[in-house]
Image 1 (cartoon, rainbow, N blue to C red):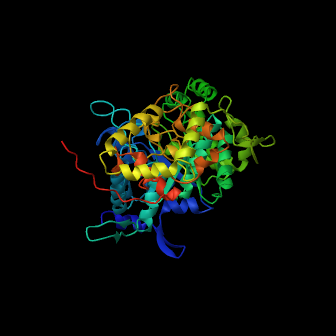
Image 2 (image 1 turned 120 degrees about the vertical axis):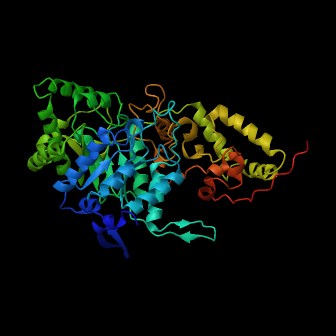
Image 3 (image 1 turned 180 degrees about the vertical axis):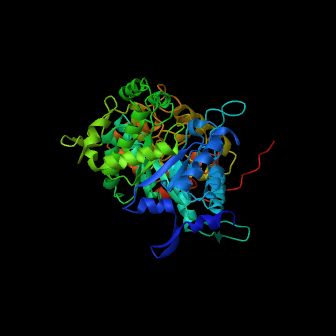
Length: 543
């Protein structure tokens, strides 16, 4: 098998819950309490044999020879711009004798393509995956491309876990169990959100990712020590303190700092004050290089002292020599890491924190802040709740009659006008996309297919800023911010972190979601214990 022998050669066989499996070098580095794991991010760039791709492979070969780095992190079309695929670069890096950490995103691939690529990476000996939604696609041949977002990271982690266990797959001669794969899959979270609704959405989705099997968590980039500390506390509060957390470090130069400050690299948090400092530093004879390296080293020390399992280091045109400087200096500073807390005091304006501040350390105490404000959700949401209780809850007065009507209409000549009537009503109230597998019951009566550009069904992506959508900054509020406010008005916001909403079943596309609901055919059937009614064959129309 292509590449597999080489990948397995660097692995360690371990026993896990009675099962024998292999553990790669990167996984061992994160799970070993005596090792502080280091990943170095490389950006392949656009093209196949351009200077960018050659530089990546030269850097990878150097990292393999030096032995400082436990894995090389390979980006997947950052900023939504096409680049050499992370999977292909990862396969080349495996042959150099060092493990890649492939960024595996959902933005450009449907569920079949994701599964196919996973099979390919298994054969190539690639085991480390960082699952993400991905930046919204922005450029391509002939104009902006159509985004996919068929699965979200929670779904993708579920698929990977199932494949690691030996996926039960349909075959022409009946079901067959496939051989288990060997992936070590992680996920991303941002603790650097300004609003309570925005931040809690991140943490609720984090909980779902952990429940779906995330083996490690990587923090988004930010420079607020209290927020970095907050994430470690949240992991423990959720009962996942044993899962390794990796901190993000970037050599912050003026260009990237400006881009991050305006959310041009979605999710990265650089405040106005930090940007001003970086610009001031760049006026020095070395263009701020010494300050950049020192800041990165101090952040390394801070993360190590707080209890992070490792760091993810990157920077535009960063050399291996600069990486060595950051790590060496960071290890020196780590002994007195608490003295560095005040140097990473870059709070967002009116920013919200999950825990009360500990005045003695400048970090967080153990007590969560009171989340007792209850925003008004508006008349529309109140009407939706009343309508839902009457028609879409099994104890509702109209549930039985509506189910009887659905049985009568299903497969008859009335099905087409019934469906059209539903589409008109839901088009007005929810901008319905007619997917046939409605999720508004899971999301405070808001539609993730029509009102979220990334179609996220289990929580927000990491790209929002100041409560606004990554795709429509300053124009459209993030769908999950709206849902949080609606639910919190009835003290139900915790529901955003409970249960997984499955991906859309596209077999139901353009069919009646009401029929599918009442007849037990959509994703709500199992959760609500709605008995499934076998579909009737359509009666022929007379012309």
